[in-house]
Amino acid sequence: MAVSKAGEFRINIVGCASTGNLASATAAHASAAGLKCLVFMPRSVEDEKIKQASVYGANVVLLDGTYDDVNRLAALAADRHNIGIVNVNLRPYYVEGSKTMGLEIIEQLGWRLPDRIIVPTASGALLSAIYKGIEEAEKIRLIDNSEVAMTCAQPLGCSPIVHAFKKKLNEVIPVRNPSTIVQSLAIGEPGDGYQVLRIVRKTGGTCESATDEEALEAIKMLASCTGIFAEPGGAISVAVLKKLVDQGEIGKDEEVVCCVTGSGLKTIKTTPSAGKIYNVEAKFETLNKLIINTISM
Image (cartoon, rainbow, N blue to C red; front, side, top):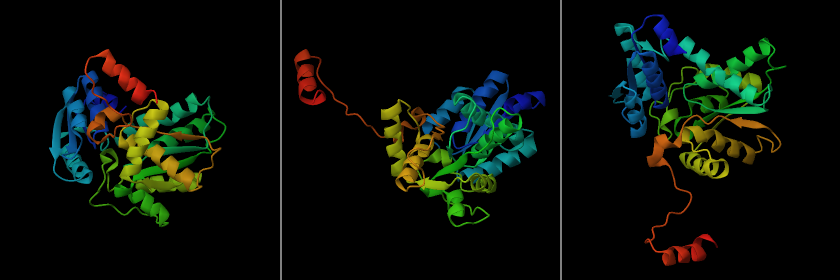
């Protein structure tokens, strides 16, 4: 949506500040639109995400520092050089695109809502946008009501919104030095943090964090049980679901949608193996023995 509007406004260069996934999406749409692309990311972003953005022809700028440093510099670049940064000066249209995820949830459930939606949360824009789509769906009578417990999931090493929620604060205190392998959610100063707090409280939802280990375990569980291979930032919604069920916060009869927002192919280096891997010589006798003694047990 944001890239399309950039073309309409005759902006020739688009880009974004990103922890990885938005960079690839922006670069792909810029390529399809015939626009130049300049994406800004922290140097710590996974190599796979850097390569994916560059393969679309985008110019990738890796900066020393946190995502918040990157976001600040991208905003300055947008102002000085007339660059359409999708999550800065084109942000209203970016959110309009994101809200379709809420509409998709409603559609796939047969034009109704689940009891709860758990959203991996970095800046807070996605959770806010999903709920915006839900509210608008009620307004135009696609659904009868907008009652759903919106739930925020963050990594423990960068969970400023969770901290504010649990401390009953009305402001989000920034995390200056995020410490987590969940790089895609490592935004210490979430731009829509206050909005997330408002929505979560309004809908009777909650905010919870998961450790890196819990996120990695959720990757294995999600892949082995559903065939969905997620990155840590995507699987964290499942990690938080398990945690909230174990705590009794979520009832076992509650219908929950977990938003899984990133492919595990982008974070291969941090992905744990689940099944065992065997190396055998190319002889049936050896293979037969392996199957009988190991796999068939």
